[in-house]
Image 1 (cartoon, rainbow, N blue to C red):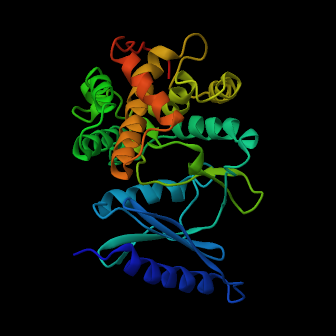
Image 2 (image 1 turned 180 degrees about the horizontal axis):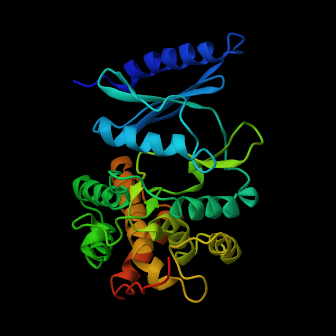
Amino acid sequence: MKPTSDLLIPELTAKARATAHARSPACPCGAATLADRPDGIVVRHADTVAKAHPPDTDPTELTGRLTVATRHPGILLPPLDPAPVDLHGRLVTFWPYGTPVDPDDPDAAPWEAAATLLAHLHRTPAPDGLPPMRGPVKAARAVARLREAGPHPAAAPVLRAWHTLPPWARAEAPMPDTATLCHGDLHLGQLVRHPAPTGPWLLIDVDDLGVGVPAWDLARPAAWYACGLLPADEWSRFLTAYREAGGPAVPADGDPWPALDTPARALTVQTAARAVAKAVAAGRPLDEVEQAVVDACDRMATVPPQLAQEHAK
C-alpha cells in the first residue's frame, strides 16, 4: 500500500530541509506545502523545493525529462540533481525555489514570456529516446474520471465533443509529430521567476515533457480564448510573441486555427471533464466558468474540427 500524503508530506519536508541545509548552512528555514494532489506533492523549505511525482512515474522517462531541464536552463528550471530518489515507492526530485505567477494580479500575467519560452522549447532539438509528451494521455484520463464519476447532465455534451476528436488527440494513436520537444501541460502555473524573486521567467514541471504536436502547448490559452474566458488582447499578446520568437506550432502569419483547433478542443474537453467530475464528487452545481466550457463542448459536437494545414517549421 502506498503511503498517504499525511505520511509522505512530513518525510518529504524533512528531505527538503536536509537538502536546503546542505546548500546553505545559514538557511533561514521555514517550510510550506505548495501542492498536495494525487498526481504530485510539492513542499518547500526556504529556497529548496521537493516534489513527489505521481505513483506510476517511469524512472527512466523521468530521468530523461530531468536531463532536458538540466541541459536547457534558459528555458526550463533545472533540478538540483538530475537523478530522482525513491521515497516510499515515490520518485522525488529537488529544485530551487522560484517565484510563481501571482494569481491575484491577472494584468501582470507573463503571456509574452510564456509564449517566447514555448517557442524556444519547440525549436530545441529533442534528444533521442525521449518519450511522447503526455498531453493527450492526461485528456484521456480526465474523460475516464468523468465516466467514473456517475451521472450528470453535462457529461453527454462533453463525451460527444470528445468523440469528434481524431484518435491521436484521445491518446488512441501515435501523434502526427514525433520530433518536436513539447512541455505537455502549459498554463501560467507552470512559470516561475528564478532566481527568486525577480529573475527571468522559466518553465517548470517536466512530468509531461516529451515529443509531440507543439500546438498542444498553445491549446489551453487558445481554448480559453475560444470559450470567452481569455480576453482577445491577452490571446493576441501570447500568439504574437510566439510567432515573433519563431515558434513552429502555427504559421508565421495568417489563420492559426487549422493548427490549433484540435488541441484546443481537446483541452476544452479535458477542462470540462474535470469540472463535471469535481462537481459530481462535491454534490454541487457547475459554476459559471465550468458551465462555459461545457457549453463550448456542446457547440463543438456539432461542428467538425478543422484539419491542420502544413506549414514551415
